[in-house]
Image 1 (cartoon, rainbow, N blue to C red):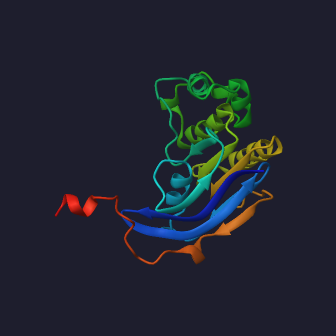
Image 2 (cartoon, helix red, strand yellow):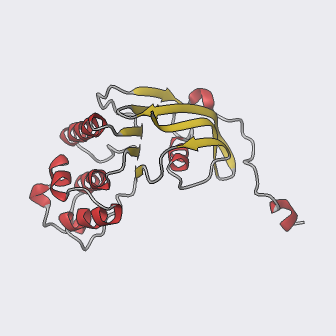
Image 3 (tube, helix red, strand yellow):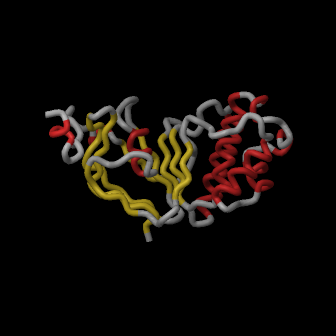
Length: 208
């Protein structure tokens, strides 16, 4: 059974379509890697699938409360420690184990350090460890390895493999080879012509 099914999806940024006619499905235990040149709309597509902006056309099917989304912002509270940040997110999501998340991204030695005192790479590791406590089956990830060194990339890839082995799924935009047994979808053939996105009903009339 698919954890995510996308049918004939078109998405827009700044009022213009970026990609259109996109269809794919991801089953439990599977990962899909999005590829394509910068600016083609990978981030826009991920945000749309995650429910952060509306689609122009098409249909997205997934279970309710299935998504954990991680993008360029790490979603950290600087005054809280590493462990307290994970505890906060565990409470928000209704929670996974903080210790498991600390171990997954090698954060146990930093557990009592305020997030504001972390390096960029350490903050990224903490932001990704948040996925573990989310207990959400579908991870939607936008360039998750930014600021990570090679060892941390390997740890992250292992974390994703563990998630898939437990019946989860992942949709990932990345240019890095994570060594996953994953499908790859290149968005280049789905680049939209530069046409405006559909306006809401009554939009034009409001300015008549």
